[in-house]
Length: 434
Image 1: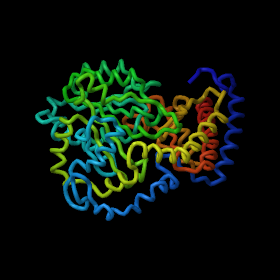
Image 2 (image 1 turned 45 degrees about the vertical axis):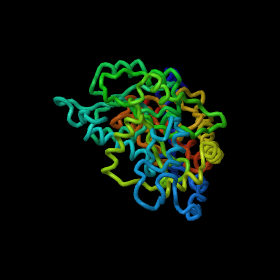
Image 3 (image 1 turned 90 degrees about the vertical axis):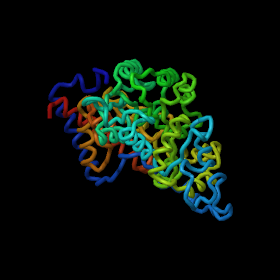
Image 4 (image 1 turned 180 degrees about the vertical axis):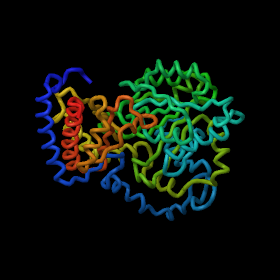
């Protein structure tokens, strides 16, 4: 934050007057008994309704059959139907469907299983399981921050040590990433959301992607865990361009170094989509060998429905254009609200992403917790402070994640106006020492 702002020149009495004015405004919002939720990136009902025809598809017309697995109502098809694998192959940019496994509705589940598998069995056949590293060493992960709280939750849950890496405007601080990965063999992975990163909405630059794809890790079982959750989630007709990281890894003969995850959860039904992992054929074979013990196959009927409904990449882009019409006004409402209430104050900064599901708001240091608590007391629910950092510890107590998709535009306008009062009040109280 800039050192000079609208409050920096005020004396104590003036600050007390400002606090009185803001407190009165805050009381007006409290009297409204608001119940506004901007906590998580949930699709709204109108978005979910876009896919209702998915449930009306008559699979009997094709006798429930997929090309290679046959009757999708039966067992088998461990890696998913070839049609569903082709759908994700086209989206992710893999060379062939042997680099794709299609699973159930949750890519988070695949990520969790990937980490758990490495903890118990190792990353490849013969590798040391992360839970049995030499001496008392713990597996470590690099966590570009602010980042996705559920990535961090997996690491914390499994006892993996997290190392905070600064997130710049074009991606992770690659000088730091290269230094750490190249010098410590206990660093086993890095979390990445390369397009419309959660929560900042930034897209990794070509340079960052190329440097990631050419890392020289000290650990031969180091992996890039690339969560491509928002690869098709543009808010404008011409969204950000992301360099193909899998192709870049292949150029460097380092295709075994990366896993790419994706799902249809924010394309069709959040609770009833399909998901996929993309990796080298060597990695896919290893993953399949462990999955064989875990399951006979995922929901192929849902995979078949999704292929018939979405058809191909062009069909998905057309479907996502309908999503864009619904949620773009919501992002605009948040950004316009911040500009109306906070522009020129120099006490806050916010992102204005071209896609994804979040807006990142930065408030003065040591004010995020207070702001979020004030908002909660008047009925505006936000993601808990610190959630966008490992161990829920924001070192600056300044980042607030805004999720605009679920509320209505009207509710968002009201919520943002109220939130901006909370930001100002929290900062004034900090200056006063209240």
